Image 1 (cartoon, rainbow, N blue to C red):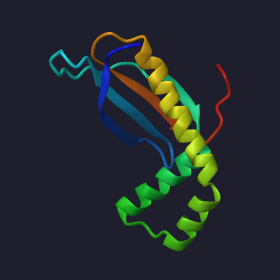
Image 2 (cartoon, one colour):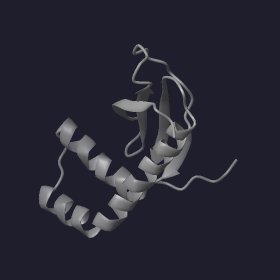
Image 3 (spheres, rainbow, N blue to C red):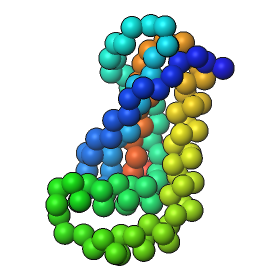
Length: 116
């Protein structure tokens, strides 16, 4: 098991509901150095993307029906938790093989993408 530890999470929206999730990690004994790296995963998480899209609307103060948002969140609760768990599993799988500092990056989309 790797001894590197996550220390910063960044969420950047790049579309209406798509966003990039990145997590900086470092060995506890090394100096903090920011390093930009490649996207390590592209995952289809429609429930998470919709929930984060609603968060973005709130941040931008766009109209959103908060009661409807809560009902939708409650209805999709299990799916959202499952998608978050999958994202964290991807992160931990990446960290298992790392020895130094770096960044895990993942593109989150609400749409399925066809393989290249």
